[in-house]
Image (tube, rainbow, N blue to C red):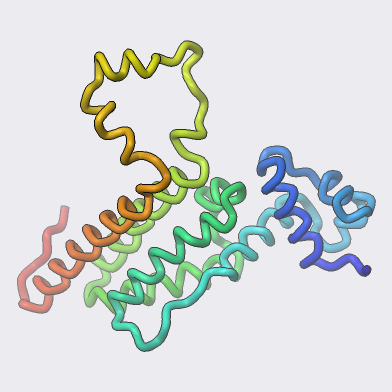
Length: 214
């Protein structure tokens, strides 16, 4: 089977899912394909070019909102799809979270989201701030779900459950709601809060009053 960019990207994605981004190398991708690493450089001049292509592939799997939805519901759809895409590529997402989207695919993706936000918000400054605020929420939520607190490094001598029950009763009572089975409701609460606040700002602008700016 001929070696193609798509086959290399798929092999690299499989390697990242198995071993993580930090362990990715051209040699390991070549081994997955039964090829020498040097053969990959005919398609990707460097590992960074391959990583860029993997991020582009991830972005291109993101579904666009149905045209019949009103603008603010399109924005809701995009927020849920951002999270869904992150969870389709959980091992790659931490790189996506900090990767500058400055390939043609990346900047077109940013442009599409900004246009959508601008269709909801009839004000350049508020639209830009909304784009950033939504990004803060989505990045944090997606990082937490794919590579967050529960998967992070632990203390050398972590406290016991008994300690938490005794010393931190509020934390003990809330802990069950931090589990994965509650993530959908938590995410929905955040989306609803953001979009409700945004709608109030838009209504204020429509009424001719200045919105709150700092």
